[in-house]
Image (cartoon, rainbow, N blue to C red):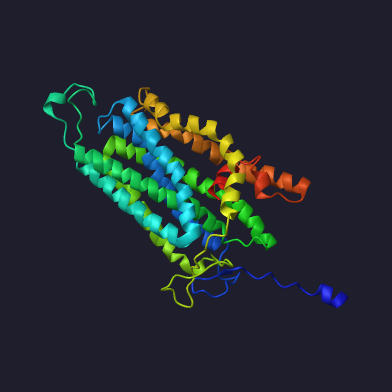
Length: 373
């Protein structure tokens, strides 16, 4: 009996399959190598979405010639739809497509929407002679055509739908790469979410600022084309990592009619009222974020418009108004490493373990993780 106790215990089997539908191996699938591919596509997605969201107010009141009130209403309406659509995207992924397929489809829709958005800026006519010396948006002086405005709003709402499918799935798919039954992988998954937000918002603090400068000082066409190219490259990188991914194998999964015997992408079926019950449990967290959402809506509309009236010159450089939004990203960049390297080790030392649900009380990004699930 003592000899048996000294023998190494077998690792718990993975409840996942690889890209060929075979049982996944810990050594050749999942973990940080797979997660890095997924983080890469998320960084590009946040770059594209935040790049549009940050400068939307400036573009509507500038080249499109809308009034501040009309532009603020359009921005808040678009943001509201974009924030609600992940509920639809997660339902589609869990019930029909699966997370991997949903990320692929959402990325393709992203590329299409960003391409149409770039095209809408190309259709912008030049300033008319009668508008010289008059404010944009004044009577008879809008520099945009009805076709351009229609194409622009169709494009941004297409991007909102793409974000609704992308956001709830790519992060959950990243968490699938770490086995919760393995202690070392569980610890890595716990750290994954903090570094996820650090890469997504920290990297974009610089890139979005550069993008805003390109749009306001160089060309709106180039400023909208860059995120389109970035999403296309990110989709290619995401597909390159397919052989390293783990695909969760659910007991209630079934395959598509045209799937082969070795399909890697099981199709999860609804499991009664489990999803509705889980959603109701999140209601207190959602309700606590309502005030935050009210402030956030002003961040992208009123605050950005007010920033455009400031003296933003640093020598010969004029800082874009939308770049002031990066103060929030900067706070994430500062506090997430502190949380990961100081708060979490101290909490584990005194409590022996620190679950993700417990970290929601002290982590900057905890509530966002819970809502994404």
